[in-house]
Amino acid sequence: MTMDYLNKPEYAGSSHIGTREYQQDALETGESVFGAVFGVLCDGMGGMEDGGLASRTATLSMAQAFNEMDPEGDIPEFLVRQAKLTNQVIYQMPVNKDDYGKTGTTLAAVVICGSHLYWLSIGDSRIYIIRQDEIVSVAPDHSYALELAQQVRLGNITAEEAASDPQKEALISFLGMEELALMDINPNAFILNSGDIILLCSDGLYKSL
Image (cartoon, rainbow, N blue to C red; front, side, top):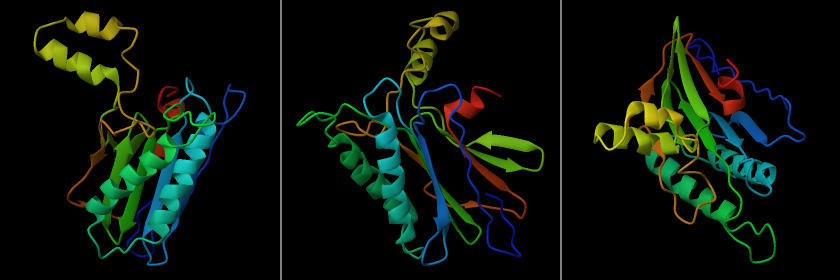
């Protein structure tokens, strides 16, 4: 997404299956009936059943909610509420009959109302703000690396032990949990400048660059 004060934000999306046999990423961009611009990206978890279905379901659920969202309302509160609702939708998806909680997906979502940017991040898909020659990720990955970093700060393990832990990239929060463990939103709007670019991407992109 590119922000231009003279026009509404421009938006576009693209996906590439890479070396996988089937696509587990899903992406929706659009403009709500009230004029807000939104983007939603989900990455189905490869180690779980029906990750692609989970990502598509979550993406469509969030996009529908954004399309009907009132930009004059409390957007951070809306994001928290919708994240919890979508999480329950994914958690209750039976991979097999009555088999709940067996699929999952990350979620990265943004909504732009005028020059105001709000975001929601769950998992390890990322949201970047690109301004001139700077690029910044707005939220940390919700992986076991967060807990390892805390153990390093407490002196329980060394930084080398944390870096070599084979589970460091395992997700500790994602859509499809019985209760969401972590989510990142910005309670106050981030003010965009003309020319700012907002990039949503899965780990398939940022791990390749």
